[in-house]
Length: 341
Ligand code: NAI
Image 1 (cartoon, rainbow, N blue to C red):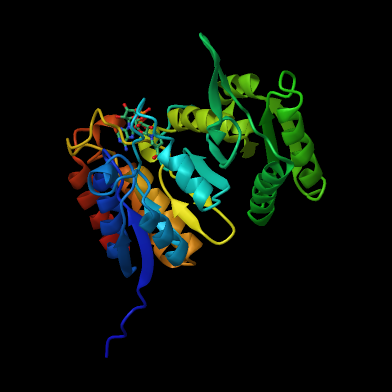
Image 2 (tube, helix red, strand yellow):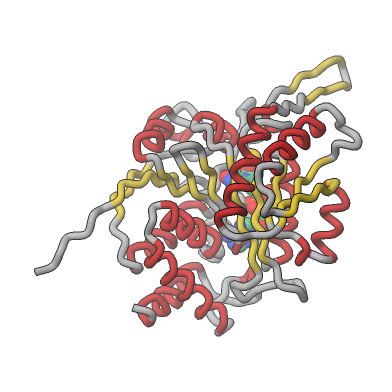
């Protein structure tokens, strides 16, 4: 007698540009690994404007709040039409304060000669992304950088607790407190207090510009990194460039009891609809989601299939130097999942 598997109810935001293509790929892979999901598909981004009069409908926020877990494609914020960032709006509405982005060269692709295995913890709710801007006078504009002790402390706690649980060794706080003594100074003070509670971890501080140079030259010195919102965003893309590009770096936005999983990349309008988007970043984000749901066996199997698939260097999309379409890459990956049954 076959036992019917429990279905997980998960919100799915396909998003804009390549979003529908890469999230469809992730759904196929999850299904192949034997995870049954009842997807609740909800709109957001530029596409949502056609059907709803907003880029972030209430029903979307409510769906994620109710299901507590979502897989999300990238969202386009229409530029110059008075729309505030949809991503920032979603993260703020759900208080998804911790943006976690693992960057690994062990997946088999790297542009660097040294192994890279670092995890970025980016504060996700404030900083220059608070969206507080104004024209002060003709020819003069102002953006407010908001840093609070509360937000800095909780992102530091996420980073240190994760580093402790996962037996990591070093946490770097990245800042520019030599110039922004008040805002980045408060960030550092807050992180230092948390660091003092974790004597098993080595705590280091590094100025963001030096950090960028050190990452390019000696990325192996970085283990876990904790950063404010803007530095975290920029350093994430730099790190993606070290391990094969935006097509392979996943991410998670975690709050106290809600989590939204999405890749680091955007909607890639230059390749949208061409069927050549690299789905790996979204598949890896979905794999982080499976682990969050406690489905480690299924996640291990997908991870092993990805490593096997990449080791053969075939059926790669153009961003990885190949000629495969998204569908061809997914089909080849699915064959590896079947092999590892
Ligand atoms: P992007 O990440 O969309 O694209 C940068 C470059 O990387 C492009 O050449 C693109 O073709 C390539 N690329 C990105 N993902 C790829 C993939 N999976 N496979 C192959 N190539 C890939 O960044 P861009 O162009 O700055 O932003 C485009 C739009 O995306 C903007 O509207 C932006 O606001 C939005 N965006 C949304 C994000 C989100 O929803 N989390 C994050 C970043 C940007």
